[in-house]
Image (cartoon, rainbow, N blue to C red; front, side, top):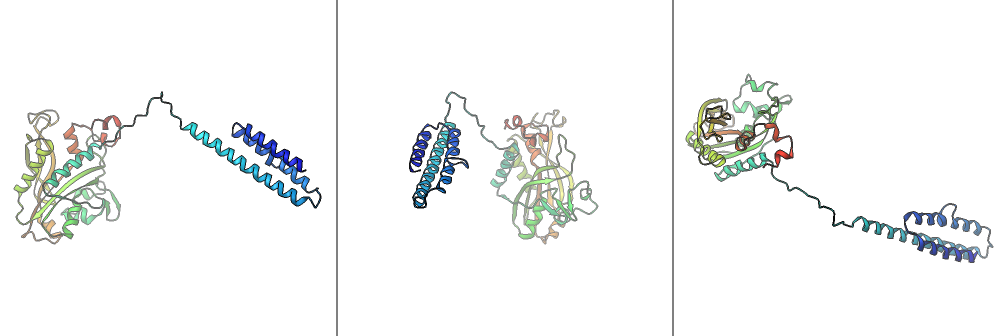
Length: 336
């Protein structure tokens, strides 16, 4: 049996050297280590050997089995390494992979531009929660219970008096609750209204609101800041116009127009031949809003304004459909 063990070792070494791939190596493993393989046959013969020879023969069989296992594993590792090297080969004749560079979404770019303009004027950026209470979204802003915007068809109510904010004016209240004047902040963020989606409406859009409160703040301060903003955003030749309007949280209130950037105020289809384009609403903070946050209307005055980022972006780039911002069409986004 000693000779058979020696012959088995030699034949294994010879066959192992001739193995060319993982499949032939597996055949060798089954031949020597399988349930019906050569080593299993040796173990059967060991049971019939003389008692004196069994210990020595068992030791030699164990050494042979361990040797075969180690050599098969080593050879398997070689095949795996060769396969990995083969997969990493590069065919230099193949065309390369083109990866497009990323860029800012047009809304993000315009929002950054708006923020930069107001920061340069001394404003700070403030943010607040998108899920709000009725108090911050309506009551503290002097919006009465019977106001149409408080109807379930005009606001996304979640549960009870919890809702998705319909404007970033909510942040104004939160800031004034925690801080005494002077205050000079802008409040960018997403807002939600259940509008039917069309070329000019979306159920989600972006706003930037501004607030300045201190002693002696006047309407002329508001006009000066917004006039400077429009010139920096749309060009030095841009003119502004203030039209009387109504908002519950400001008094007096105004709609702010700019001279049409398409026709330079001469009149065209975009501005309905009026020469003007509406861009935002503004006004002096209503004294009742001050009272809700514990400010004295006799001591402090302030102004507030709000604009839609989509509206500003559409005017700036001549975009005629708000849905293009959210469709993720690379052909549209490549233009910016």
